Image: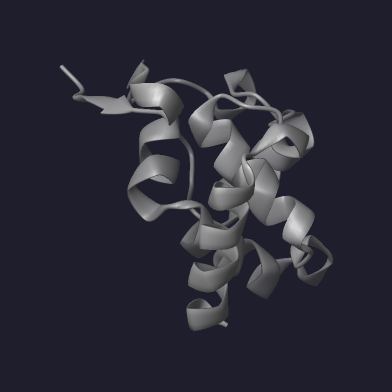
Length: 102
């Protein structure tokens, strides 16, 4: 059984090995397809890689995904939040981490 993770506010979120990415907030069929192309097929795989590594993989294969919006979309999907509503602290942490990856 997958281990629950804590989302914002300590909410417990369950990871599912088989949950399709397009079932997550912010992720539609096209984004799911792009993630599949870089080897990410499930919510658990996205969680394990993290949004910055997933974004890095995406932008290497598909440079048009290199905008920060894509990074926010991936983080929001993992937190269950629309990307435009990410708390400022989360955005700032992403930017710091992305800077180290870049």
